[in-house]
Length: 57
Image (cartoon, rainbow, N blue to C red; front, top):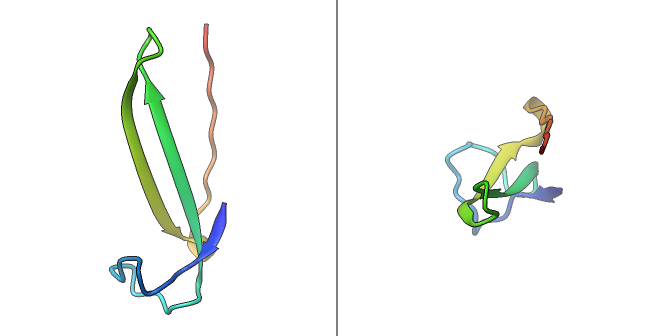
């Protein structure tokens, strides 16, 4: 999901307010489908490629 950087997000990326960013929300589950991790990630949209490959057996 692409968003725009707002003043409420951390400015550690040294991006200007209004710059496009990639927003990633991730849930990780164990083998019994219990949630074990949840995180949010914000990335510079102009310099990041995000690829996901997932298999479940």
